[in-house]
Length: 212
Image (cartoon, rainbow, N blue to C red):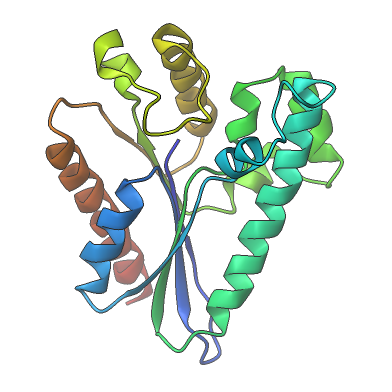
């Protein structure tokens, strides 16, 4: 899931625009927007870091227990990075997050996820509201089984069919956002990234226009 969130800080503080997407798209976004004079801060996927460090669905007592840990860290990380960005001198900063707070719902039951977010007094509507735009980059597994690989992320354990099913569920979870944009899979990765950048720029232009 690729989520782009825009948050604004007034009172002389920087304007902060938050993004959530999947590497290596974060590098492309950074290069594109820094060339336009906008600061970019990238935040790696929390799940990959946890799994690589030994905290995983198969090492925790239940998958729901793992997702609860992931959710708590995701929220704390988003809030901490946002506060750090507020101290930076740039007038516009893009916070590029790999994944968002609703992603975990794709991996457990609706009831289990509801209990997790309720433990921090969140609703799904409030989680969606943390982000001003959602850019959903469709998985290569949806294009073909041969296009899918786990070589670029050893924390992935799903086969192509499982990955495609999770990807479809993830897209549906985020589709309730008022600014949900699907970036469909393509054999040409650069063309896919061009569509992503154009969609982000359209959102920023729309937000700028609404303030003028």
